[in-house]
Image (cartoon, rainbow, N blue to C red):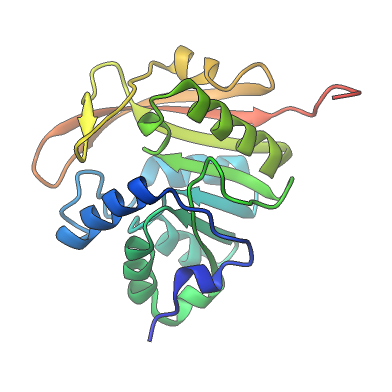
Length: 223
């Protein structure tokens, strides 16, 4: 039997009811290979994570993503997967089998979850940030990154680009170019690299993604 992901989490869970219900419903009605963001391997994510060089990885919105499979198979990473939908995490745990015990699983809203301070070497987010359409939500997200990623650690965020969709899974999104995506995080996040990627969905559509790869600078004295 697969363990309840919240029971595997060493940190308290914090979920937003409306969003939780929406995303659980999405994952209950579609197979993992049917959701628009599915890829067999997240090559861009893996390349940037390896370029970052850290070991403690937080995959935000990891859900049913295949990224954790490749990170666990590598064997050199301390992996935490956070998602607002317990349903999605349970699917991934079943897929991993016994290897699921090597991963921390957190059911929670990334903007409010109780994450350990200065712990993660790499914060990875493929397609969560663009769902944050309110300024206050984005500010809470950035504050979480600044608090939980160690100084010198890296942040990898992918969103829909300027030519990407206006909605996903029935929800509005915010589209970004590299300048505005980096600008949403602020001066403490040094831009190391940015990339554009065309994702081909299982339905055969093309989606433009923009990636920013940043380094978290050390806070100024007195900060």
